[in-house]
Image (cartoon, rainbow over the protein chains, first blue to last red):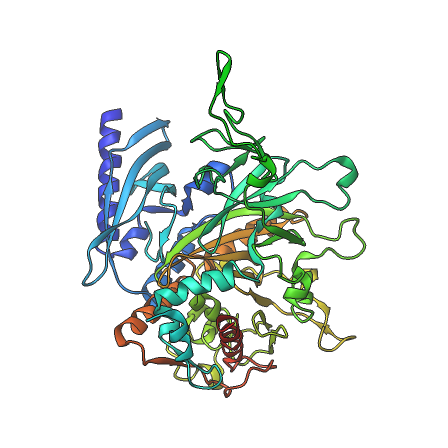
Length: 156
Length: 444
């Protein structure tokens, strides 16, 4: 069972990465439950118990507002992302709630430029089983990178 | 070319055309460090609330020099006059080592790992190994020469001034007192955010640290000061500001500066947004039909301290929803509705700076207000709905300056070429006033 679950969560993360790397942001929304939480937070804040996050979205509707910002309102130089997500580590689960973590590295490539290490950290997740399969009810991206390379527009 | 020669090449009168080399000349940047950051200016170091206990310290930068802000022990008899905040340079007096590597923490003393030179929290040298040599039978090997005095070999101690919990420091003995440096026109706007109503026992409001965001921006440091002295762009670059009426040209606004033109406050009051032909027609960033799926992102609740007696019209009340304060050379203080932060510029060469956001609230905030401040933080910072694009345009500005070369200049003539305060935001007066001051400082 645990092996199967591990497989399922790894597959979810791979699909999640592909959606972002292919800029399918509407698909990205569908990995979450309606009342899901999505945060991107600097490790220094996380470790010190400081509540500020770089991005803190408290519902799928808020995530949709972010997607509108990414695609329509936030002026930015375009770039590709490439997510490399490590194998998932199950942190304990019961029938309904699965806790897991995985390391990630995101590379950024701007037009005409070399690829750079953009954001490195770990996902701290809770997932739930639904009729439509596994969904993320909370994803906290805690990043080690002490400096954001200018700006961070797309979700991680 | 040498920097002084470079500066004399600014031949145009006034400050409404800023030559590209002001942003791209490496030698000029070195002079800026000496004359501005290490010269007669007060630089922001941090918030007192970041180091609440004796021995608490944090690292910070003034220009490219790393300093330690630390809370020293203070004898009970001195506590009424000495808050104990010290700022010392993170550079050992012995061999120049940047000895402190923890970004924050608590210390009883500072010890350089290389040769164990030990400093008190105030930067005094407390002792060093083998100062009097090492005994070898009847003789003594080595040791410091006669006349070596610990007192002469402490860390560089900066002058420190604390205003309402904001800590500033300067390397110069000649910098005027902080409140004089900031000026009477700017002070009321700092008081508005940081000073407690006069009924309280303490005169400063107690702050709560909410956290940090850090970004590295590939542009000249002055571009960030300009960005927050530029009331022209927010209603054009930032969709959220023009669409939701947080900042745009049909609002009641005021541009304030100090007598020298180096500091500024942009003051405005939000409106309901929506279409108004004068400021939205043809503006592509305006999205007439945009609405939020989750309006908690903009759950603005007015706070009592927003209203003050209008410094320009005593006896009348004024209630801004936004004040953006630029304190030369390196601090921006933001109040945009319920979101509060300091933004600290750390230059890293002529073409790059770090930008450090410290978000805060007040000790008497309700949990709902704290959540609101944190939610509205989504608008700001390196990923913010409005601020992310500021970093982007600064990068592209620097790219533009570099590709042309020395004879190019920026055009900065909205509302003329003067440097007066205005009662509207359709102006670039604050940028002109900063460069007018900058020219004076850079040609001593």
